[in-house]
Length: 395
Image (tube, rainbow, N blue to C red):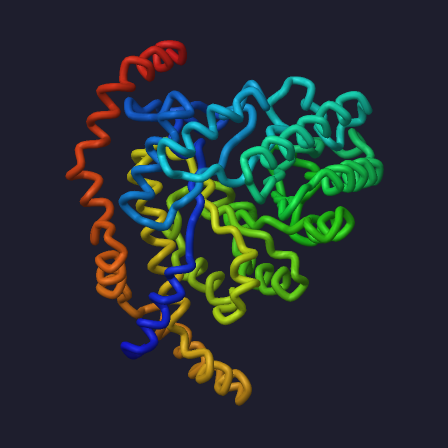
């Protein structure tokens, strides 16, 4: 089992581990079949910032909030001063900026890959607009996910759409300023069920390289087929210098957006194990972000729970005896190598994390602190009437 020194090293590494929370994780969202509204769900951008500030206060490791352009800045550039005010008021930075290329009725047949050149241009202008919003707010990452694809063979030219997408990404990349990055996400299916324009990490990698040196791949842990070896994908992206970050959730099938580690914590441990622990620059280039929005669990509770689990699994991966593991791998000692890895996974890091939180001046048990704060009951009273109006519109 890992010794005290190894645990201390893991906690030192944990000092560098921060997680971005999603604005939409605090609001009422649901599946394509419907949604179960919550009385305490955020109904305004300020309420989202307030919830994010509470998560930061209780965990100490969530300094930024991802923003969605149409949901959080519906007036585009005119909304930037309000975001800046909220950043100052709540002490939570604006994080990755997420364009919306799937909600407009014109995107029925795609956005950047639409067969209509006018619609492709409109979609491109929206992304360029998002890049400018990110620049004004000092945000490094523009997170790009496309719902583009087709449902039936012969309905679209797959080859033409590849070319349109490459052209668009080149223009987006050329608009990046300073240290901005373009993160390209992939998804094998949904809402397109015959072909998806960016369906896997290989396509995303090619598009990132074709776009330019500041484009990277974004790995959503829910966006994979059953039993896919995600840690191998992560290792390849690290090898290629193309890993930009993660959208963390868990899944029973695909993209279920469950709380992190609720289904397969060992998988996330294996993913964290592949990320180098010694290369500071490489580690700093990986963005760790939650991408979840809960119908069943409370919004704030689920966010805090995911952050806690991420810390636990990250700490477990940090206590792997890498020297010993390398020796066993070189000697092809399969059972012993696996047991070396499993020993770290089964290490109970919770007492060490409690001590780490004490040193950081945050609650030792963030979920209990949330329950004792009365915050959830308070926002349910304050926001309940607005959410009740939304509820009646769904009746």
